[in-house]
Picture 1 (cartoon, rainbow, N blue to C red):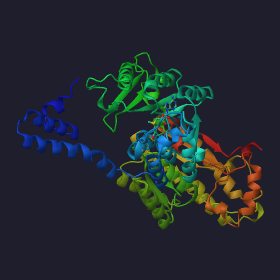
Picture 2 (tube, protein in one colour):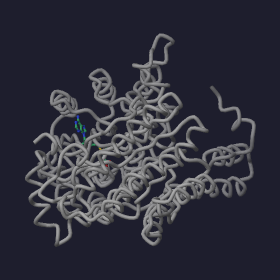
Picture 3 (cartoon, protein in one colour):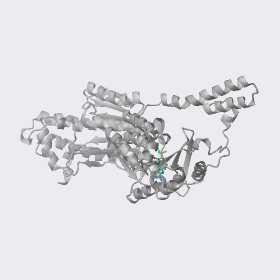
Picture 4 (spheres, rainbow, N blue to C red):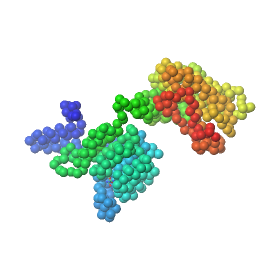
Amino acid sequence: MENGVHKTGQPDTPVEVLVDVLGKALQSSDIHEVKGLLENAYKLAHGLDPYLDAISTPPSEVCQELIHASLDHDWAEAHNQGKTQFLQKRECCAGALEGQLIATLCKLASAKTVLEVGMFTGTTTLAVAQALPHDGKVYALEIEDYMREFAQPYFQRAGVSDRVEVVVGPASKGIAQLAARGNRFDLAFLDADKTGYLGYYNQLMDLNLIVPGGAIIVDNTLMKGRTYYPGGVKDELADAIREFNEVVRKDARVDVVALPFRDGVSIITRRRDASAEADDVITGTAHSRILQRLKLNGKVALITGAGQGIGRAFAHALGEAGAAVAVADINGDAAERVAAELAAKGVRAIAITADVTQAKECQRMVDTVVERLGALDIAVNNAGVNFNNAAEDTPENEWDTTFSLNTKGLFLCCQAEGRHMLARGRGRIINTASMASLLVPHPQKQIAYNASKAAVVKITQTLGAEWAGRGLTVNCMSPGIVNTALIQSEALRPLAKEWLQQIPMGRLAEAAIVFMASDASSYMTGHNLVLDGGHTLW
Ligand SMILES: C[S@@+](CC[C@H](N)C(=O)[O-])C[C@H]1O[C@@H](n2cnc3c(N)ncnc32)[C@H](O)[C@@H]1O
């Protein structure tokens, strides 16, 4: 299909301007005018890549050094000395901009495992490895063993060698090996021998090596323009790419978008089954992929006790998942600090100072969230205290203080939040209970805390049942011992050591707040989610 907008309008892109200028030059018989037009065209084309480089973030220092080393290397000499099987060329290096593009796509796709077919000296491999999470991995296939030796010191210097596995040999064999090992990829980058592309593509598709929602990125799909303008030259590479492009375009399993970036980059994604017969199991509930259902974009979350510890971690997790966050704490400075941390990450965040033992304060807190952030979708009632005293020595005021915050305060929050959510017919309330609701933690003595947290479970069950048919879910979580600054303190260190021995997993607790706040947990209510590394099993 022709691009009607561009056909009818003024030249709108550098290439369209180029076409316009060169078209005028072709029609002119005035040699001075032709020269002037050609000069314009030359400057326009010549300046494009340097300008794109200048306005894009440069690669890391190590990556830049690797790019320079790749471009400066005497590849003819390396081949003469038998170090490479084939005569390699400096142009093989995809360069800074393309490396940044692939790394950026990896970040956008939240990729963890990436396949690169054709590594050369590993400049893109390095950019990708640096963009991956610490437990991510890029598998780079390369026929030349020399490239592995070349790249490895740079991977090491960048501190990412554990995130890179170079598989030396023909790429088709490498793909088969990784498939046999059970590897699957969020993203694959095809950039080896062009006549092999179709075979690699078929392997990736037929063996289901790209995860749902993943992509195959293909370089050189324009082949210097010879795919659409052969210029009368018989050209094996352009023929191979042209055939590849046509096969992909007609493949009903995928969507493809071809970009005029560098030598042409195509992005291929697998389609989902959109047929009328496809049910929710195939398409995902409401046609939403499970990982999309975990996203909290457009939602507003309130977290009490968010100025430090586990509440601060909840605020960051919910903000990262896309929610706007209200950070509530009795310590206003701490709430402000956490809100500022979130804002620095790009999360919309506000701080609220509130004493949630008072009903009026709870209501004011909810009203502030609604007024400033528009609504309240997710409420995490997390503020709590703990005192350690033997039962026989526990003073009355300690019992009262604990229950006033951990139990009554939490209920008052649920009440104020629940009223707003019931009126809207939707919402998620998540209460912080504790594994102390299930067992009696030891050796520390904390009767008031244990009893207050058991009550949190009953409040949660009751509200979960009462509000179940009205669009609200109310759940609580019972974390084991959480790795907070308090646990790291000198005073608690010996105790923390003893606790670790009581935990089958041998490490401190992690949470599941995003799952509990998201659509993915929509059928769960009144539940006490125990996250204790098996602590309550022993
Ligand atoms: C264009 S370069 C790759 C550039 C690299 N992806 C980058 O971003 O800089 C192509 C590489 O593919 C390798 N190659 C060629 N044929 C191959 C094959 N059959 N199997 C594996 N690697 C191959 C070459 O040795 C060369 O290093």
